[in-house]
View (cartoon, helix red, strand yellow):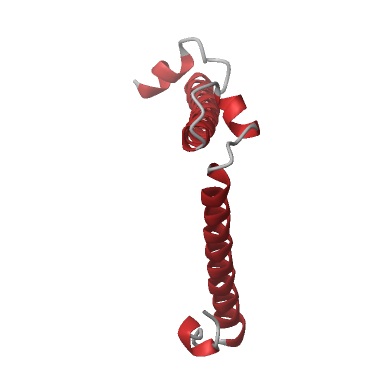
Length: 130
C-alpha cells in the first residue's frame, strides 16, 4: 500500500520527497526574506524616529535660546543677535557648562584609571580640585 502511494503522484520520478522538500525550502526562504524585510523596515523606522527627535530637540533648543535672549523674533534671530543684558547670564551659563564638562572629564579619567589599574577612583574632594 505504501509502495503504490510512492509510485504515483507528481513526484513519482524516483525521488519521493522532492515535492515536500522544495515546499519546505520555499517556506524557509520566504521566512528568511520576510525577516530580512521586517528587520530593514524596523531599522528604517528607528532611524526616522531618531532623526525626528533630533530635529525636535534642536528646534526646542533654538526656541529656548531665542526666548532666553528676550527676542520675540524668529529662532534664527535669537541665535545671532543677543541684547546686552543677556551677556552676563550667557557667561554664567558658559562657566557652568565648563564646570560640568570638567566634572565629566574627571569622572571619565577616574573610570579609565579604575579599569586599567584596578584601583578605586579618587574622590574629587580628596584630590585637591574644587
